[in-house]
Image 1 (cartoon, rainbow, N blue to C red):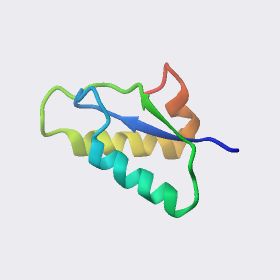
Image 2 (cartoon, rainbow, N blue to C red):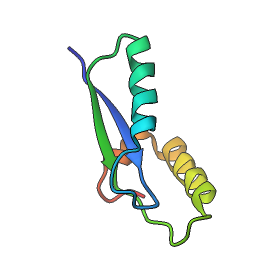
Image 3 (spheres, helix red, strand yellow):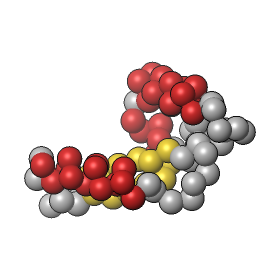
Length: 78
């Protein structure tokens, strides 16, 4: 059975994966008959305030598009 990985980037240091987000992603995976989901909190820089999240999202999206999803699994990335 194939295992899928869901990378979670937390730039505001919540410490845990948002339960509602996890429930939504798990439901989407179940819709596509994907049962084995490995959740990984990817290493990323932390934002200093509470209003920069949009910039961080765009930066991470750019990195993933340019470098590929493998960049999230690399400890030295982002």
